[in-house]
Amino acid sequence: VTINLEGVGAISSLGSSTRATVVASTAGIESYQINSNGAATNRAQFTLSPDTKTIKIAGSAGLSNTSIGGTSTNLTTIDASAATGGISLDVSMARDLSITGGDGNDSFTFAGNLTAADTIDGGAGTNTVSVTAAVAANVVLKNIQTLSLAATSGTNVAVDLSQANLAAITTVSNSSTGTPSLTNATPGVHTLS
Image 1 (tube, rainbow, N blue to C red):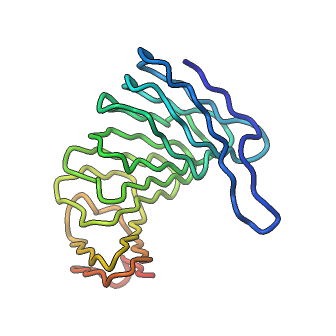
Image 2 (tube, rainbow, N blue to C red; image 1 turned 30 degrees about the vertical axis):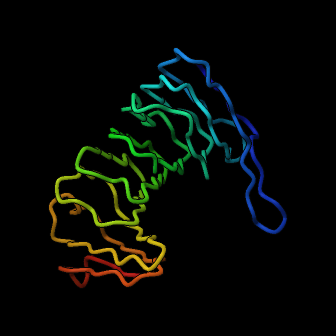
């Protein structure tokens, strides 16, 4: 199934964003092609088939503040390698995912569900992974430059920046309500904010 987005969602005069709801949830659909085009960034919340296995994202317009719901545990692949506008994707559902970003500045929000079974390649651009729990040493993170710590409820996130899978990380940003524990941060290499 192909979903074409152009001029979807909005930014108000006060700067808040509104997501459009896109429902294409017929059982039996296993693959989606989402094309994000137009002059402005698209914003959408997707409810897809419970049988979804693969989602491909392409297009020149950004795809921001976007979440995917309604998918079953069959979802394994999100491939945005053909997207050039930059995507911001909430992938905090508990799935074992292989994710590939595109040419833009991409961000992926995992909450507490980034596990050793996930593989993330941000692609080109300056890319961000957001978590609310510690990053396991055997998670595959490639071409991810910023690690965003966004724990709530006072959770303290511990991160060891010497882990080989965090080698591309140059910035750690913290918006947690708890106190993060960072070890092996290197002056001149890591920026903490």
